[in-house]
Image (cartoon, rainbow, N blue to C red):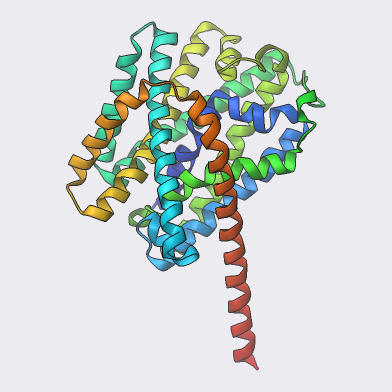
Length: 356
């Protein structure tokens, strides 16, 4: 496992990127509306993602943690952790269904093929990946994430070269009166922290040592920051044309040619796929650790159950539940970082006492 840190960084990036990130919709809502200040927001978010990844992966390696429940129980106690776990599992299941639905939408809108084929294909590929557990997820992300990074960087660079580095939304939109780029960055990281922590706490089999854990977390956060910067700059340059579009980056890519639009549709689909397998694994792994059944069977049943839900409209459900998950994620993020700081202070005190 010479490149363990690359595997860790790839899984981290693949878990977070998702449809909202790759489509540019989340980047607009959390950063684009602040104009050039959104660039500072992404830098802050990248630092926070790196810190979160390094702290969690290091804790997983040191404490030999194998699943999410083992990570949160010592932090919150059994009763509170059970409630948090139930909320997290529901979040992951809804997220998985939304990724399946998104796959169907891409097939229907971009390829004029039945959305059912897109849903079934995504479910089947997720089942194949989940059948190989952590190693399967690591393998898929190691193949897919470099393509995502190259694709997003290439599209962003081409937009800047073709359109010039002139931001059409330099100062920000009027709808930003209720917030600022700092709070938006923190909320964005906390919103994504739930699925990221669930996935990272399952990565012990591919963590070889302390150094690899730190590098994986830090470089995963930096990778997310690089992609977000290129998406944001593309959006800020063409903001007046894409700010009210459901999939802004697809519109950006189409400006470069129809072929580029199709390529970005593939990028978006792959981003959905990596997030789907991360969400699916979080659910399957929890059920498996509780009931010790056949993981292949559990994976199959999970993917089949999700298909009918993927055909239902989730927009109202998501609008009500995702803010709640964001605040839960913020609570987890603050608690984890604070716990880590107090841990470091405690170690320093013990060392000083020994010296005396």
